[in-house]
Image: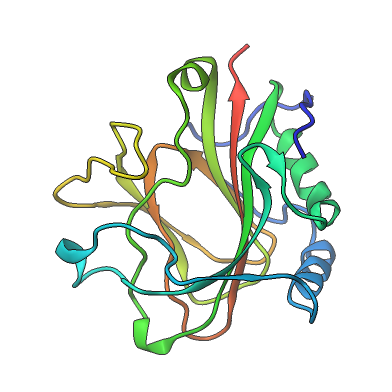
Length: 219
């Protein structure tokens, strides 16, 4: 879904992070959750939620948490026959802005509960890196739409990836928490794409969400 649309509303919220509850309505989010967790919806197993060098963070982060994933959009191209399921979400995001918007990556995550990892997080990371031209011409964002409520929060950090490399990032010595965003059904949150974030382990129910990486043109 790479159609470029101009919305009519300005971007809401603060400069660094925006949280919008009741994004599309409880009925929509419940129906989408049921469709995506029904028998037959294609999920793909990933051994690690995040890959990278973990040794120095062993005491803090969940190192080997597997995740099931479904890619709707990959490298700017539609990658799923189920893209129509999330069209209302894509359109709602586009309508938040009064500038041209392009989705580069959209994927769903399904994390199974594991009480043994309660309080642990994935390695801090950024999702997508953009070339210098893209960063110069647009504002890059990462966002999450939560399909259900669970006991785990997405953690955003004060630190940012300064070298723009997601494969071999320039990790700070210490990560400090900027904000914890509760996983609540029908909530959408987005932030600057170069800000480190972590996904949490969940203890009570599966954690199902859709992750968005997009660029809003400056002109």
